[in-house]
Image: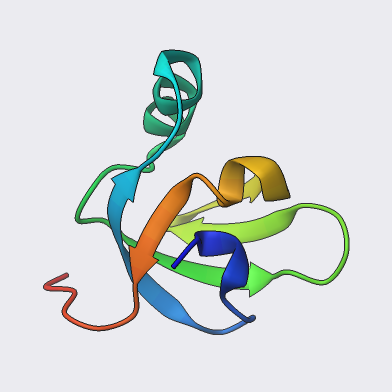
Length: 76
């Protein structure tokens, strides 16, 4: 499921990044890599506030739809 579908407080594991080279590069530079655990802090209106480790990142909904996550089976 896309990252944008998660609700605040939910945690998931990144499975893959969809999109072209530019989108994948930007997301990777922000820390969105396969196998990493993410947590949604805020998703109501505007960009999503996503926790990646000790950092929080604001991510637009279009980019959040490119990040495919799974809520089960995350090893981290």
